[in-house]
Length: 401
Image (cartoon, rainbow, N blue to C red; front, side):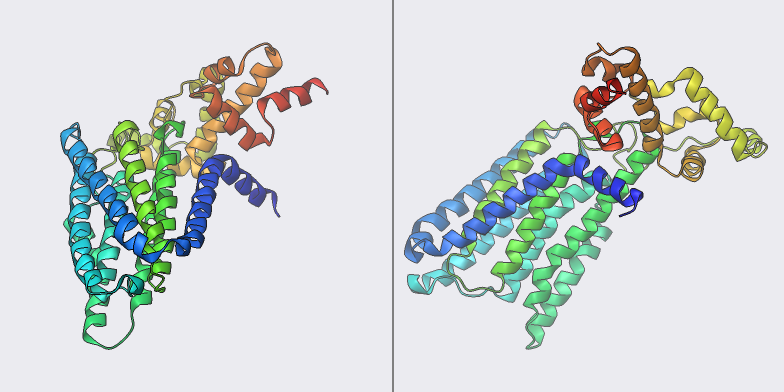
């Protein structure tokens, strides 16, 4: 393994270890649920457990809808979430009414037969609604009528083909949610890249819960694919409690957690505010070479130490580099082979090492504040990610030299 690959692997571990643990625990719980569900008597599940689960889910969606319409605080994303919850409520009520009619014509021992094509389409629409919220969250303004139809149209086409011709296309419908998850991961990576190219601190963006949301939807999609190809009478038991858990968790995050993007970086319209230079400034920017720009930047970083400000951002470099946001980002990427966030982090780590050598009695919270980190926790995580040692371990190693 190359040093670069090892650093990426270490970065992933330190950055997402809590989210990975969350996913492992959730998948383990789902697996145990599927193993234990056949032990539930079919008549008890059909007459008691399933109605209780369905009632709980619909109650939660109704509460979510009411809460978002009442407490949206004028945010477009919360209004969208409220309408998503309303649509989910309608879809599930319609589906439950149909399934109740079908089940009433069966003996309890027969349980629930295979889903019909339109029921699979309804399941895909529910998955799309669940994924539409984080897509809009990461790319404000993305959720338009055109984009909505572009995502939903393949499902409608597959459903129409399945309806018109005697082909079994259940496997295609079952895999659609996983395709949507892949698209959403692309949105997340693009957002992460945008943040790292424009801000010296990205920890306060609070994107971890969005990653957990993706993990939950992925597990839900896998569970959905499984139940599409089995006729186990109690197979809905796991799916129902998993949906209930997702709705409760998401509602809590939407109401009580901050938005994942930087407040003044991305507008509700989805446009990134770009500060353009005048023609005179752009002409001047072509006079100096990259080497001169680099020397000017490094001298300014060493003398002024702007990275000590937790709110240090890419456009602040215009104090020494006459470029707009796009050229500044390209300059950092080309000259230092990293994003602006990584560029700033390197300076902060070196400053932290200097402070720990010169002031060994300082506490971690004091060092984090002196070096531009948002908190001692963030400082410890980033320091360990970049050096392979915790601050305490690094100090001990330095003292032994």
